[in-house]
Length: 300
Ligand SMILES: Nc1ncnc2c1ncn2[C@@H]1O[C@H](COP(=O)(O)OP(=O)(O)O)[C@@H](O)[C@H]1O
Ligand SMILES: [Mg+2]
Image 1 (tube, rainbow, N blue to C red):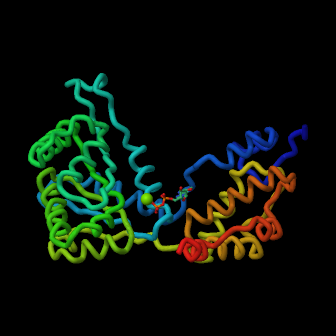
Image 2: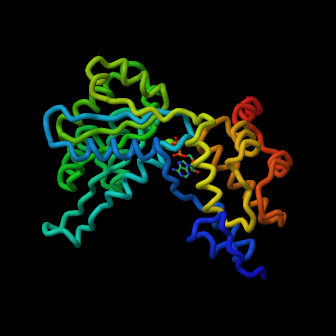
């Protein structure tokens, strides 16, 4: 076994991992991690801001908008983890507190499925009543009792898979729910979700868009690569942020965050198993990555 060199390319917490065997390093490389980047921090701060807003009839809402696989769900999950539920056993009245709920808009949504999705997100799926009215009453009662302060509606673009009339009714329902509970709503979705919201004159002014566009090859992108390099336990420095590697990774990922992370972590795992111990331009060439747009073409 190689004895600890100083591994100065790694952040202190990752240095001790670099001496672990290949299997455990590959496992660490494949584990999901949270990397803070400027837009994510700004989005978290914006959500924190609406959460701390005093109750009033018109609560401010946000809409996190970006392409698929670009970090939207990771941001709202990070936020939810920062505001965890309190167990029923630990509250004075014996009722659990759930400050933040993240539900997913069902596809082909109707009112029944919508309320069912909220109950599922609260871990109470089996309680769901049968009629729409029963589900609605139960949902609103539970949201109040558990002190829900913010509702995240992920995959909001699924709204568009319903018929136009159905879309109208769900948009009305969202507006009604926000008013009834006086809590902010955070919608999460693609540009189509934004279009759906904009089709409703009353909602459009109440949802402030937070754009999460694809990445560009700028300083923030370099910082992302440097941060990634510092947490992946390779024994040699790769210099991911240097132009030769950074541009290649960018081209392969087309600037989509999930793809950037996937290209880097998959090549890092190969760098471990091949013994190269660093990501090189050649390794990227030989890894046989398919760009997302080519993958789509193959799928058709
Ligand atoms: N902040 C982050 N730190 C590390 N990896 C991230 C981060 N955000 C996104 N990712 C990676 O990108 C993938 C896609 O992110 P996700 O939030 O599911 O995208 P979206 O909801 O926009 O489709 C994740 O599975 C993860 O691998
Ligand atoms: Mg998502």
